[in-house]
Amino acid sequence: MLLEGKVVVISGVGSGLGRSLALQCARAGADVVLAARTADRLDAVAKEVAGFGRRALAVPSDINEETAPARLAAQALEGFGRVDGLVNNAFAMPPIRELGKVDPVELRGAFETNVLGALRVTRQLAPALEDARGAAVMINSAVLRHSQRGFGPYKVTKAALLAATQALATELGPRQVRVNSVAPGYIWGDNLKWWFSHLAERQGTTPEQVYEEAASSTDLRRLPEPDEVADAVVFLLSDLARAVTGQCLDVNCGEYHH
Image 1 (cartoon, rainbow, N blue to C red):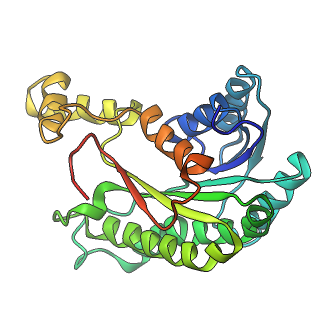
Image 2 (cartoon, rainbow, N blue to C red):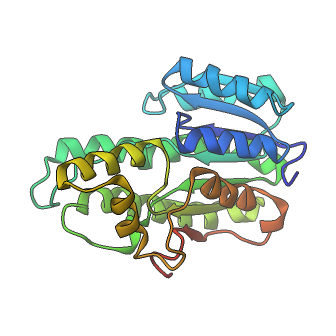
């Protein structure tokens, strides 16, 4: 019950990591505010949160809309009276293309969600986080740790998010608000399972073999599951991490060392 009595706002709640973030926070004792563009998904996750005896407030939001972050903050405070934690999980996948060839318009769209959207939400909730001496966590990516061809646009947006996280940690630290990142590698959830099955069919092999090849580059010889990534976020939101800010915690089963 690391988050008992706390309220956590989570953006980008869907069927994958966003769902795990909500449920792990609820398991740890938090009430949650769920934000995403798709209301049906929010309602489904809210019902699961209620199964842990916690309260959930679903707030359909597109954080790229200028007024949406302010509405999200206002509804969170109206619903629960406080906000102790924020998890910026909303994400738009940039084109997997070389940086020298990508259309800047496509890159701008991903930058809008991955960086500016997270910044807007954090700014709106900073006063509430200050009142609670709370914490924010940005969901980043292991793309920070490599420069494989085709991943340049992805890395640019996530590197910018890391820089924003560090700058916010410095700016909000005197107000006793902590700001950190979690950077997962592959996450063994439904989307990756589908992708590995697709790769197996294309390569004439099996999904198990594709998994083993991917996992072979990690120290633990396996890939992290969504709940394991979410648990790292719970830690950073909790008082156990009360002296941790401006950091990026890699959750990748040892694929990269940092």
